[in-house]
Length: 312
Image (cartoon, rainbow, N blue to C red; front, side, top):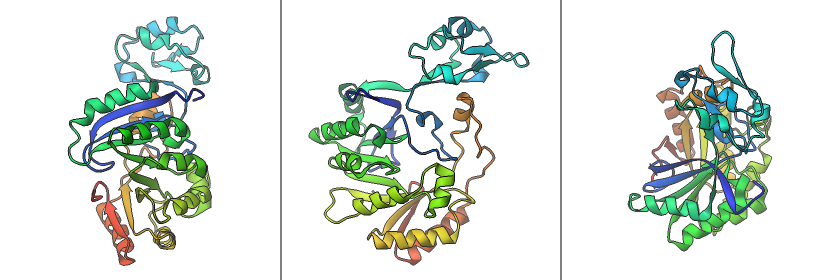
C-alpha cells in the first residue's frame, strides 16, 4: 500500500498455538510476491481487496447485480449463479454488491488497519495468551508492507510483547533488516533447493531467499531462526532435495528445521475467488513420508520437528 500509516490485512486470528511460543495473535498481511501453486491462502496473494463468493449461500436474488455501478457482475444462464469480471472488481473501492447481499454469499477479503487499531485487538487477546505468548505476523508476505510491519513490531516490543514473523524472505535485505530489529522468532520457508524448480512452482528463483537466510543465520542475532519446508508430494519430498537442504543448513550453521505436511484446507477459498486450484486432488503426504524426511535430517544432526511439534 502507498499509505504506510495503514496496512492491508486479510485475517486476524486469536489463540493460535502453532506459530510461536504460547498462545498467539496471528496477523495476516495481504500481498505476496510468490505464486506458490499449492498456496493455502489465495486470498492473501493480491494486494488489493477482493470479493469472495460463497455460491452455496447464494439465494439468486440478484440484488448485487443491480447495485454494481461498474457492471462487473453477470448471471450464468445455465446455473443461475453470478459471475464476476474481476479485472473490473480489482479497481473497486466501494463494493456495493457486498452491502446488497443479505444472505452472506458475498464478502470482502482485505481491510486496512492503523497500528493503534491492531494494538487494540492485540491487547484484547493478550490476557489469553499464557506464558510466552505474543504476536505473529504472516501473510501473504509481511515484507510486502515492511515499513508498517517494522513499526508494529517496535510498538509490540515497547509493550513487552513477544514477536514472531513467518516469511518467504523474498525481499531486499534492507527491508528485512528493519523488521528483524524487533522480532524474537523468525519462521522462514525453504520451499525447494533447485532454483529452476523453485521458479516453476513459486514464480521466483530462490537465490535471494537463500542469501537472506544466510544473512539471518549470522551470529549474534537477537531472534531464534527456524527454517520451514512445506512438504509438497512430487515437488520437494525427494531425497535429493532433502540432502541439498541439509548441506545448505550446515553451511550457514543452522541445525533445526520444521517440516509441514501439505493440506487442502484452502480449496474452498479458490472457489470463492473464482480460481482453479491445481492441487484440489492432491493428498497430504503419508505419515511414513514425513517420518522418512525427519529421519534424514536427524541422521545429519539437524533437529527436525514435524507439523506443530516445534518445541517452543
